[in-house]
Image 1 (cartoon, helix red, strand yellow):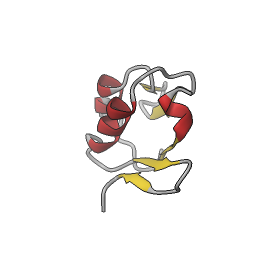
Image 2 (cartoon, rainbow, N blue to C red):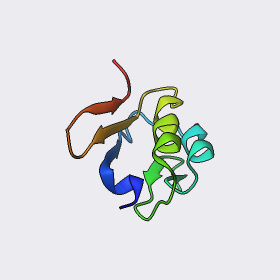
Image 3 (cartoon, rainbow, N blue to C red):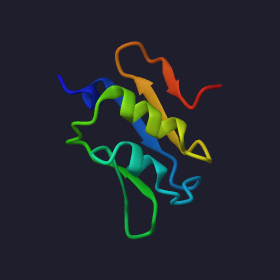
Image 4 (cartoon, rainbow, N blue to C red):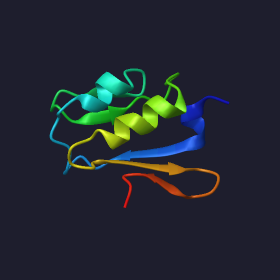
Length: 78
């Protein structure tokens, strides 16, 4: 099972400012759409660590990452 299949990733498009750091950290998981908003690429092959780091570097905490199995919120940290 790919790492992305173990994670629930949500982008709050109202909060996203299109900084692009997420796409730099995990380019196979995130890209910016035509409105410069982050979108999740479901066929990602990025490793879990890269995906979590992408969420952590978001300057406005627009990326929410949860463990699908446990429901634990992994990002943003509270």
